[in-house]
Length: 316
Image 1 (cartoon, rainbow, N blue to C red):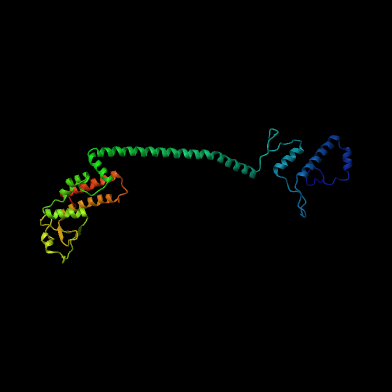
Image 2 (cartoon, rainbow, N blue to C red):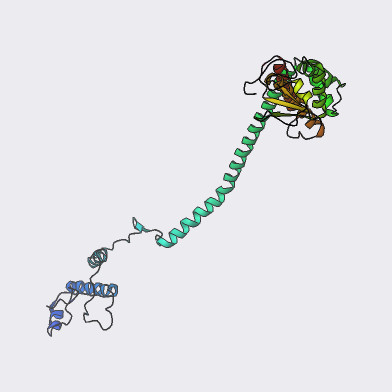
């Protein structure tokens, strides 16, 4: 027997095949017929050889295909791998198709969930804005209470400043400036030389007073009257022997008056007050509200009070 490439039947039956067919029983011929039909099924499953190839023998089947073929030869039909308990189910889709379906489902899910994310973010932002608004209102209320408690001591002075702020003027007869003149300016510019002190106050009000440090070389154009009122070792406003590091000039006069650090600090504190209220009158103070302006005025009054009591910085 030449079993051939299949291993079931000879590729070329011998001459005595008809004798065998005659003497074989009917059951054996039925078995041979079944095997012959299985052989045809096997040949239909085998890949065809490439044209022009030297090997005409078919390529071997995979293990799964061989098991299916031999099971079919034995009369047992094995179910395909995508069927369960003999019931055929849907064949699994290819990988590319399943990937596209998965991507499509994810994008659709994202599209469905995106409005919910947007609503959640908007809700969080609204809650944050509401919380900040409450904090702002609370801080504003605390600031108002603190301001009211601070102004409780001298509310009349604050009201006078507000009235002066509505119509600012440099006239000393107005209630706001008159009180400051009586309590701070006059006591701060009161010196032993009353005539020179009055001239200094007038120059401060007219913004014509100048203060400069004393140079190492003596000034040649200083008049004798200026020297008589003071010198580098004598204060012209107090008449005391002090080391005078600064001198003042009143208006267009060419006279220079030497002053001590104590007198200089009192004059500069008054000049700072007049400079600030002059800025308010001219409308140059725009970054501050009424309360801030009032407290700045109170700070300048504090400096004048310290200066008239003799507290001044050593470096001055």
